[in-house]
Image (tube, rainbow, N blue to C red; front, side, top):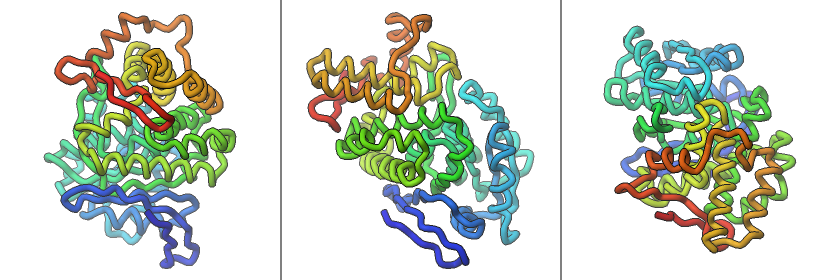
Length: 366
């Protein structure tokens, strides 16, 4: 990782670059900064577009905020033809039907295999645009431009793409790595507080499963983080991306250690599906799932109650939920039914990520 200062433009910005190391020369950079000049942003993005055609995929919430800007950035210099598609916003739109709209647009505009898809949005857009890129003409390049905390620190990095199925979340998808991830923290200025707090749950996860010092830093800096302090947010994003990149390097296709990134997710995905997609934001469901996993870990005798309290305390500091409401449709039977079709089931056995030992240590429990 390094901090780069671009010198080609009159007003240059410091930004961090975290590299995702992969086999077969598929490494790619994650750019993390804010206040990029148009020239800088255009130069970075265009350097990762291999052909002369690009398709920006975004949603109707982001269209008035950012679509014109990114269209302009890609068109600077006049050597890239840019098409756009605007999808309906929401987790409940992460379906095969909506995915087909991307493929329809790509075919209607006669995009070929040298085209690059640009995912401009949060986790839903990133997952769908990435999956469309994975299957369009058996695979085209794509770039992630995440606009939410959750997408910046987690879903945009590592090549997991897909859509939901009525029977399970992210059940239809592919591993397909981006050419780069371009993070502009200024894009968080329009992110609602609830979405921002939801993303922080994914940041906390890295501290719990593998980075004790980061967790302790988060405990000390959570007010500044949810208060949108720029330097605090940028550091949290960078440290999260470094953790994610290290895990993906070791286990790209989730044969082992990458599964630890799913702390709280098996419970969380069940909550999202069982409550109806869109009722809970992904990070909110993960926060509740993480609290459940911590409580279960303590009941197994694997962590002490003091650590459980720290988990609950930091989630509450982050303004994330830790309990389901009394009127939730989720009961033990529904949890078990939904968790039985989770992707982490292997050979008919449910595998849960639980905390065990000291802060920063976890285990895959079957």
